[in-house]
Length: 334
Image (cartoon, rainbow, N blue to C red; front, top):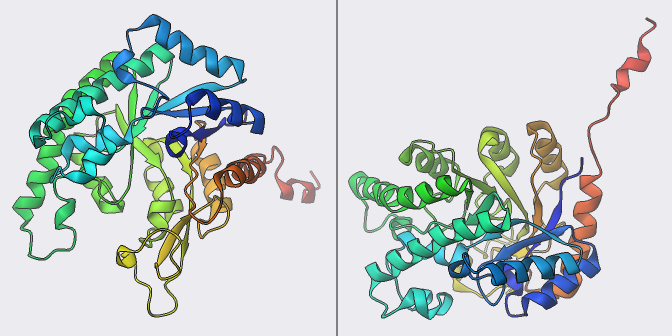
């Protein structure tokens, strides 16, 4: 059975949900990973029967299903320190409130609980998102951060996310954390430590997005192999590295997307350095049967071109399934 190919609506939330659904259906996507921002999905309306029915009707009318919903923006605010004007730009008024940091974190946590409830109402088993991190600010290691300071960051994460995960478990929903710089788990070893911090709770898994690993020189295929039991969702997004000229740096120099002086850029699926064929072979070998969600992030390509092109690229790779017959079986004389 083929895996569904979906479109993540996060980068399309400037358009009405109905318009994004129309486009995705027209292009031939199987479904959507619906973002909980813009007008796409409001988790606080999880108990509004008419509202939930309206989302389902839009999907059905366009021949789409929903397999996953996403709430990266509010998840980011659960643990972040500092909370500042960057968060004001991405958070709605009902989460931002008066901007007092702890109040923002608490309201963001409540929205994540409601996101689990909304997922259950939609018949969805997985929510993707970010966690935020109180210790990402220490990543440059100067002034030096002590081990005790770092450990407090993992303790803060566990204290804030365990009550959220309690609600996820009550609703029969899982949280798929996107391993990503600025999060509590941003690379291989921080993922190990994050899982340890919450006692390897079954309701907490991973959204595998190789684009965030490639520019860090983490092998995304090895990551799949080692965390195979935790892979709950897949983002298909690519990265192109441009660090061979001796000038461009890994930290990207505070330069905007698509600036040729950057050391790397997010790029449309299939145009970068992600080893997609190896990745799909590994997804097959570990038995991953969830959605393949195309996340369009490419400042150098129009999304109306990039999204359907990426769909074709992923659809082709998805058709490569293990053979039912061993090729060397034909050599046998018995």
